[in-house]
Length: 269
Length: 269
Image (cartoon, rainbow over all chains, first blue to last red; front, side, top):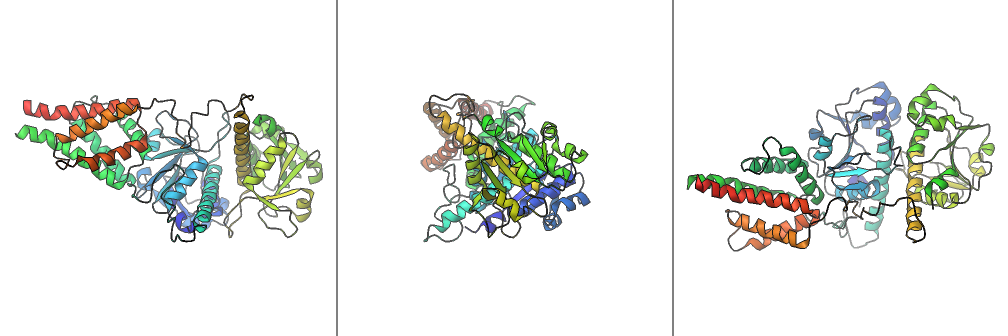
């Protein structure tokens, strides 16, 4: 594998960063580890002199940074969205440690778009932001002082990704017959899962499935009126763990459509 | 091994740091990873408000920091002194990568004093400083942009040491005589998932769900007549990846029942 190829498919998303200095420091941290795509969701101040100062020689990343008005927009086209959070969450998808999350990121970025999502300096990521992502990951710290600086967190994650890409590249190189990205090997990631054979669904496709599921259930007596939220969260967790493939989303939506039609057919007959 | 014991024998030495903000940020980085002993050699400005501001809740480390007038003094009593440098050196000892250097640091700190030495923000460590140390280590970065921020470098090294200490502690724990640290962590399996919190469904429960799904779909026009097998295989793979919990099976079956009822209700009305 050519690491730079895989890096091109990785975007770092800073969600509502308060301090422009952290944006600059995060850009510098990314650049030391070969990452270049910075996405900012509603930054409080940007562009800003403080960001430029702390970016040092990573001004090119700031100049090319994409500004979004919502996390949803920032995740467009993404197959894997990793929410980085220090807090444990009851509603969580399976929490991964940084090293395992980096291995998964690199394995997937060989073929698909990946987003690494970091929350605001003080508030972190809200539950609803985490639920837009399909992985939850954290950086191991001492239990009683988990307050990493935002750019420091980006630095550690970028470092783990750089190392993981090197490991993957070395493994690919050691198989003389294989050519191109990850071939021969890419099918199996650290979780023992098969990725490249089947294309993962994008975040949008999965969101459309959730919306369809909620509307289909809304036509039945299943959901407590006005309280679909908790149930939908459970479903997000379940399917988030599975990592839905594009084809599977199509199948599931086909099923929902069949159930939707069923009620209508019953009335007609 | 008790990690906190080993951490007590590790000092972080900042050699002639220029920016007090970096001293504060380094202290915060250390504290997140359980390191507490900060040694400053000829800091340009210290104490300083900027250091306090960036230390956030690591003010205790700044208050306890030891100020030295020479690197030699800072290394007193040390058995292992690791010089951290981005630059390759002709005169070097065998350079270690961060992960290997962290493992060695933790192994030695079980019994001896260890110093981690970081140079000035712009000049780094001079050759004569490196020669006072008995190891040279570096943090892997992309070759053409190795300019890590000082506190970011401390963050990565502290992180690697924290992980190395955890690995050492787990290795010790797997020997039945040891007790303490990290207990209750075993719930996390290799995929990083927490299993014990939620009870997994039994094989029978999952089989009942699949049977129910197939029968529910049989009441619609979704399944190709006589060919439900392939579709059901896809569903088995999907839910198999997720690892269904008992509660989730109940929810899914509740949904199926609601869709089942829907058709009947339609006919009745």
